[in-house]
Amino acid sequence: MTELKLRPDREIRISASSSLLMLGSCFTTEVGSLLAADGLDVCINPTGNVYNPLSAAKTLVNLAEGRRYCADELIQVQGLWRSLDHHTRLAAATPAEAIDKINASMTTGGAALHRATHIIITFGTAYVFERRGNVVCNCHKLPDREFLRRRLSVEEIVNAWQPLIDRFRDKHFIFTVSPIRHTADGLHGNQLSKATLLLAIDQLSNVTYFPAYETLIDELRDYAYYATDGVHPSPAAVARIHAHFRTSFL
Image (cartoon, rainbow, N blue to C red; front, side):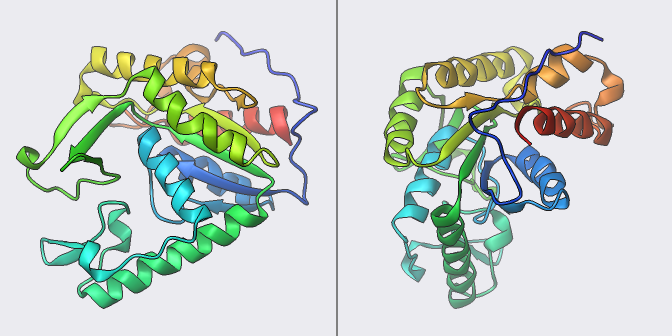
């Protein structure tokens, strides 16, 4: 094992009085749940999992502006009403029920953003799906022909996020890259995607990077630390990353 040399970050320490807003992939949920178990005030993906940087940025803007959704913004797929800006868990059998769930999530997330001392963003993939010129958060299993799939550039990601970091300069931003392998992109495509995310974060100013990706890929680097699907980290790997986070910030 090649152990990462981590040092406590004295400038953005997280304490019992801190409040965290976490946005990102399902990996965010796993680590965030452990931080909540530590007794911290954590709001984890209030609008559902967010995988790409542009959708994460849009979510943060919508939360900040108190965005409210209307029924005419929904689509019906497989008998449920859904929003392309939100995760499947906010879908419902009727438009009214879906809107209630979606707007309740926006209220929860907006309140969490307002009180947050730290915003933790986990990028999952640099690939996006565009429908009618707009990047969607979730495809909801609509036909592939309805989307244009492409990989974001480093510049696009930086241009989306640096203004937000400057806007919320009273909060500490911690960025990380999910170690979950997106095999649907192909192994080479996955590496290009992760490299794009890492390069983009490296160009952001006034942020801190936490090496979740490197912990699994470089420090642990053994399939014993993956779940049976060979893609997601095992509980032991998540625990290791959580321990590193505590060392760095708590």
